Length: 452
Image (cartoon, rainbow, N blue to C red; front, side, top):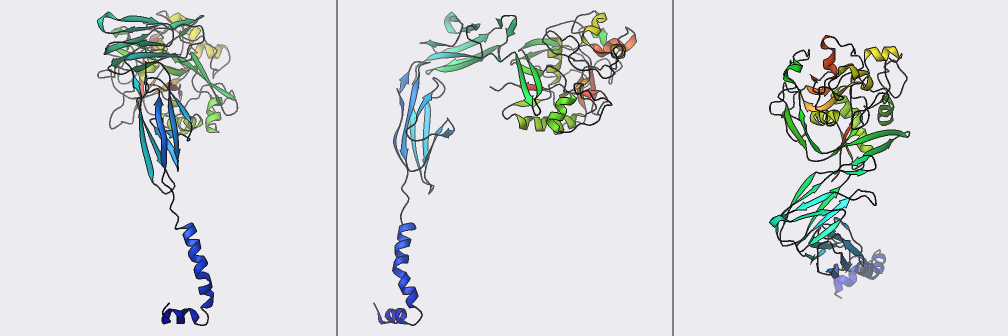
């Protein structure tokens, strides 16, 4: 050590720092100087590496020095864990192990799925056979009753068609009527799902929210007879439900069995306004505008049930569900005299002393929907003077930029049931109203998309 250094450490007051020098150096080496080990992957492979379509395979994972994540699984996988792979879902997998210091190690694994088609049937009770038909090149046709792997198929385009099946007296509709898949040099997977005919969600306070499955299919939207709209006294005139046009729904969806009631509104929002001068909690909510439904009801409802999509129906969805396969002027037929069987009117509400009728007391339509004409019901669609240019797939008709006017459908119990003048039009399956203001009798019937 040099003289200057010796003098420095010998000066009065510096003995304390000299006494800490060696221990401090050792502590620094122990804590900061040691290098965090890099991650290492000792095993990442699919066993077996080649399978027939529909056969099982296992992903073997072993690593050290960090957290491992497998794509496209999209979730952490602990070391030493065996991952069961759904056949024909993916053929390339990537493991990324990330250490605490940010360093990574990557490995890849492959699965060869031999040409074939796995048709996976979901949602049917045990013992109920599906009605699925597969067609393909060279006249190939096969009818399936349940999940089945079709092996050794030649490359080409295959169509998978699902039909309605009966569970006792209840029809079970597929989510999609048909799907197509291009089969190349590897296996392919097609899922055929049969959603439940009805669903019930429980809101806070044990309040039920019931939905009915609306099947996929096609219908003619608009006035059945062009002359039937001539007496309509709704803006902008008799052309609102014309031209009549075909709409096809490739997928099933759910629609609420009833319009939203005050009981359901309170369960979701925690508040009830206006009072409606009635204490009956099972009366349909009215006097809420389109924007209030979105902000005050739909937003909190969707937070209650993660993964679900509660929404307003499109105008096409509403009319398709109302008609329920009918092609007549009214959803029950062409005889207006049956209106009191299915709908509340000013006549019938007065007769039973119910100025605000409860939902569910009249007969439903053919698909189990009640009170389609108890209150006007908002749709997601912007207002359009007629159906020129309307979507043919049942989606909402939305402009860009959006105007302020929206469309609502249905009618109310305030309409008289006497067969005079304009009264009949209020119960016409094709009638539509263009408005944005919170009509005193405008409510909502919820729709819900089905997750893939």
